[in-house]
Length: 332
Figure: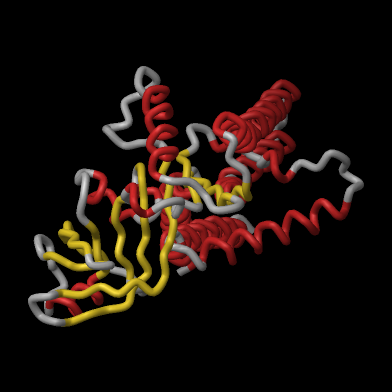
């Protein structure tokens, strides 16, 4: 019975760990997008187009991005009235104006990137206006201007997403950027701000990704520790001195190798390293900043994407800690 129980715990441990590893993949992809909320009025289409052009030229030759830009300018206009002249229905939505790669704001925005004009609607708004959740090809009117619906998506908010026009003015008040290396987040964001003269507050969730990734090292660390302990125990039971030395040496090499390998995967975001370790106010400000980042982003169009990120974070952490606890119970 004990063997069956141990086998069950063993299987559960690795299933939980696999769950954590699997959730960590999309989590690391999601935290690589950071957002600058610009001060003052923001920017207009001409400025956004020029910055995107320069960034696209830099990306070409470095790697194939598949046609996607590494950034997206965007802004929100609340309480826009959409109407369908065929059905006479109307709906109040939040209009999201973008230029660049809309999928950095909402994953469903990738469809809009393929069109020079048109819009995307959430399914609830689509049903209110056209009586169907798939209104692709229909015409919706906003501020007395027609717009072709290119597709619909699931959302808890009433949203319309479209590319910004010249007449919209300085409505792009944020820019989201895809980092090539999250370890260099501070340097990349600072360089981007200085290069284009953009000021404001950068919001990122790199800490959450680093924490989830570091927790995945718990199980390998416990297993390596158990291996070292077993080698040392076997060495003590050996009757010859050379046998003891061999097992002790093996345990030492395993321990040193494990420390070197695991430390190579252990990450500490630069934003968590204070100028002085005795600066306790730094840690208080750090946690305040993380809370502020969450509250800020959850109130925007990126909120739902960040909820997905938090879901992946929770699954990864749960899998890491649960598998580590289960492994500890199994090795008792």
